Structure formats: C-alpha cells, structure tokens
Length: 251
Image (cartoon, rainbow, N blue to C red; front, side):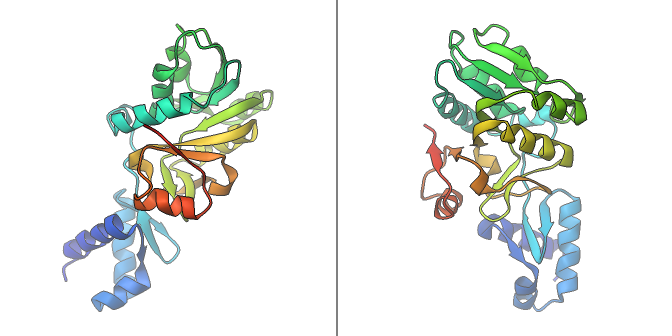
C-alpha cells in the first residue's frame, strides 16, 4: 500500500473511530509499526492528527488563527453561547476566556444584564463596551494567534481576582485526553483562571468534540460541566456522560 493511501486510511479511521492504536492497525494492514508511526508523525506535522503514546487522536479544526476560527461552526457557537449566558445569575462575577465562542456569549448577553465580567481578551472586553456589565481586563503580553493576554504579568493580575463562574474555551474536548489546547502558555493561563472561579464550564462547540491538541488544560473531572449542542446519541457526548461529565445541552 502506498504511503498516500495509508494516510488516507488512517485519517478515515480517525474520523470513524476517534483514535488510532498503531500496533493494532499495523497488524490489521500487515505492516510494520515503524511505518504506521512514520505516517502518524507526518500527519501530526501537517496538523491532521495529534500523536499520543501508542497511536494518535484526531486534530481539531479549531487550531487555526483567530480570523479563521470566526468562520468555523458559527451556528453551533451561537447555540453554545446562549446556553452559557443562561447560567449567569444577575449580579454574578464571571471570567470569560478568549475565543470566538466567548465573543458569541457577549452577543447573546442582554446589554442591560447586571454582572461583572473579567477577561484576558481585549476583543471580548471591547465588545462589552455598550453593555451595562462592569468590565475588568487582565493585562499582559497579548498572544496574537488567540487575541488573549498570557504570561507572568497576566497570571499576577489574575491572582487578585475571584469569580463565580469561568467559561473556558479550549480547542479540543476528548473523553480520554480531556481538555487540551495548542499552546503551552495559553494552557497554563486557562488553568490559572479556572483556579480563580468557583465553577468552570467548558464551551463545547461541535468542531472541538472528539479531538485533541498537544497541551493539557484540565481533566474533565475538574470542571462543572461541558456545554454542547450535540444530542445524547452523538458518540462523544455519550462517552463524556459515561465518564461522569455533566452535559449542559444547548438549544
């Protein structure tokens, strides 16, 4: 079997099975594990898969630049955003992560809704300027890829806040890999923000489910719930529920 055909087969298996075990598929195809591992390394380098111990997991289409992400699954993000906003009580203090789904939350939030919003995203903060909500912007080095502040200054600023809720944006949600993202500094910042809130909810738009990235943010057991617009019979929400994750269903 030619290398191109093998890679197509591997990508098809990732889409249908949600993972690849190198040893198993090598035996199935009558190939060496080294050949499969080499294919998986090349797929990983191309951003089409994420190598893990023993095999690979699907890569997320959310691992792209900010402008491109605004065009990925907008309807799903709008439904997730509406369900997330419904969890906010009047007068609550809320941390909003950066990202296109949290920006959709701003659009879903009534402009007269009384609350306090803390964010490390200049984009989210600017979108709130016409809202009644009080806004606190966490500063630091701005990562242009995701339009958020990260690093030591941002962590130090976050140490002085506390909140009722944190709405966490990640690039990937996987039943075994947990919550992951594509940058180590962003993963660390997200973990720190989660530690400053009483409860953390994950914004789980469709393109993120069943995929994985390089850096772990949190385990699934560390969050209060995952907000998803996918039905219970969808394999990933079903697996998340079986793992004990609370699912908050959107629209």
